[in-house]
Image 1 (cartoon, rainbow, N blue to C red):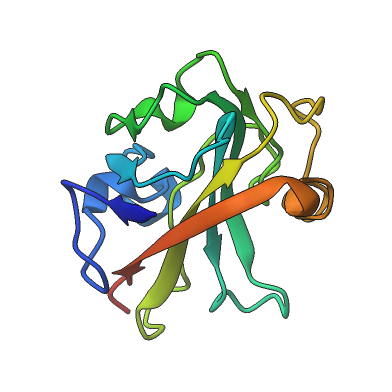
Image 2 (image 1 turned 180 degrees about the vertical axis):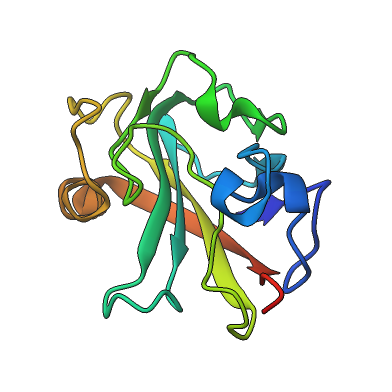
Length: 156
């Protein structure tokens, strides 16, 4: 599988509009598209995680699952849109995309977007599902995955 974006390249800077309002952004998720899912893919899931956050366990910015198998792209700004999928609970305390807001002056943080091809159409989970619960309960259903890493920092 491959994951790409019209908004940033692998290892490149994420657009400022994707940042959280705390970091002067618009909280608009970046465009993401994927291809090359294996046979048997019944749905997709997507996460965004910042391993550099000063929490000891990183920071989860997005958990979306039960994306229909026919969907291979999410438009910029769709992180807060309703659709035929489920958004799980992020570390912002909400079930929707929450943009980047690293501490000012930190080195650029890495934001790991991962798309998962799943062998089930639905995980049977709801919007209270956390990243940890999603990863645990989806693990046996993952057929393939792909990652795209963007970077973001706030001037100090």
